[in-house]
Image (tube, rainbow, N blue to C red; front, side):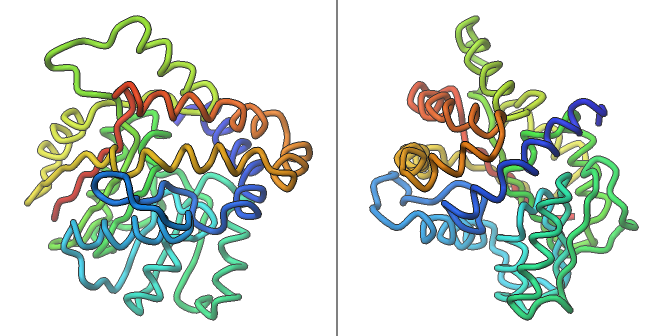
Length: 280
């Protein structure tokens, strides 16, 4: 990972995570609003529902040693650790996130079974074959080398273990290449949210076959999660959020002002919410 990209991602999440937790809570990912995207629910419940729907979709019913790649402030890590009575490890590029996740683990009496590290997902500090569940919920979009990222997830996964990766994608391009306007839209998103680039779900599937993962299955849940951005936009224009933004730095303010980029990306079918699951 280039030093510049590493620093941009770190600084973005160092600056924004506290405000996100204040407004939205511990889960730094999309919510699930039913397969048709029409269920009305509290945003935190929608985020928990996404985790549960992913577990149901993947068939994962238990785990003993979990790795959360791109753990944020420990939302998924601690939820899964408690659900499965498991050991969990989270990695993030943000020291602020790692420190807050560690504090939250202690507050939840999960400090003995959970740890959070500042680490590069493309060069993980773990031996081969040590986790029976590798969980990556909306971090793949930040990876400069998607193949290297998935290779590392595969390397640390135990034989028989499960990889669940959920990430932002762009639409498939096998029938129609991205237009100049679509490319500009994507580059605007990259700039605001510190993304090197995203790829399509079929491209991720090709990488998964090369690893090689077994029992690969894919899904596009764009419709189910798209309402999330309308809810985020509504929450960004409250007095609490406004005053928080004033003290959170320019990158966070720019991200808030650009929320419409993601909403329009879903509306035009350009941005996709891609799922990949397989076993080693």
